[in-house]
Amino acid sequence: MSVQTVSIEVDPRSAAILAALKEKAVSQGVSLDELLKNLTEGIPGLQSVMIPPEEKAEDFLSWVKAHSVSGRTANDSRESIYSREDETL
Image 1 (cartoon, rainbow, N blue to C red):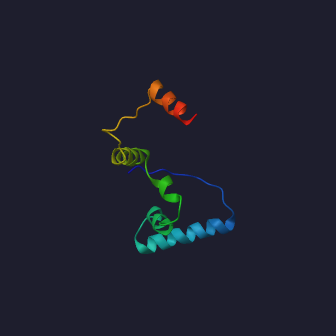
Image 2: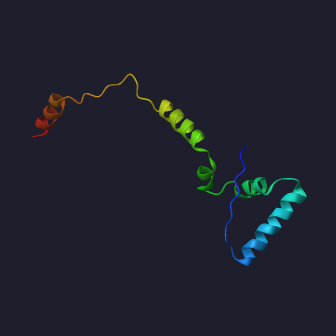
Image 3: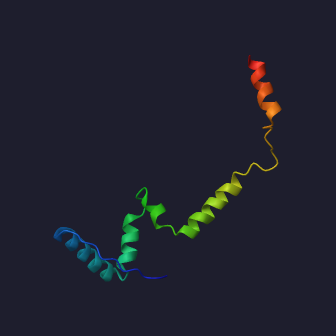
């Protein structure tokens, strides 16, 4: 896993909260990263942000395969379309 360092500007209260969380992580023997992941589990919308693009692609392809309509062909010929329209007139 690669580590990414990010600098953000926050107000003093938020900085104090982050410092306290870092101390809590150290006391629990985990990284701040792991502590934040555990704290944010179950928050709607965050999970998709945290999933790597490769995993999202794999999930999508699995979904496509599970919802495949192979073996079925649509009759979208011109004759089929216009004959149905003529029947309703």
